[in-house]
Image (cartoon, rainbow, N blue to C red):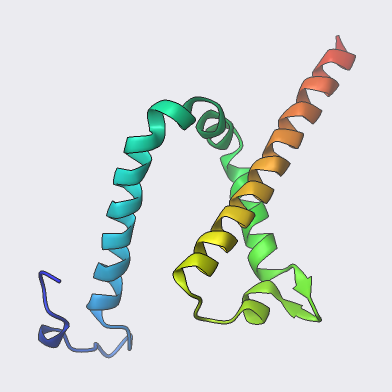
Length: 118
């Protein structure tokens, strides 16, 4: 890491180290670069759907993670705090697929109700 975590101390308002933030920022950059590389093949349909239905996607993913009861507890508690990289990717793809499926269904519902109105 460019800025070593030993240079940072905790602040009175948080116990999180800045290295926590920088690690996640680094992962975000990796994801952005990966998205740029695959965008020519996959971007047009699902990215446009996600952009049109972004509020629905936001609400759905929060509901899936924090309100979906699995074995009597929310999904995030049932899943736990740490996962392996393959498990993390699996859950990411599952939540993304469920969110996009609901966004697609919502667009279809809107198109069908527009057809019936005219």
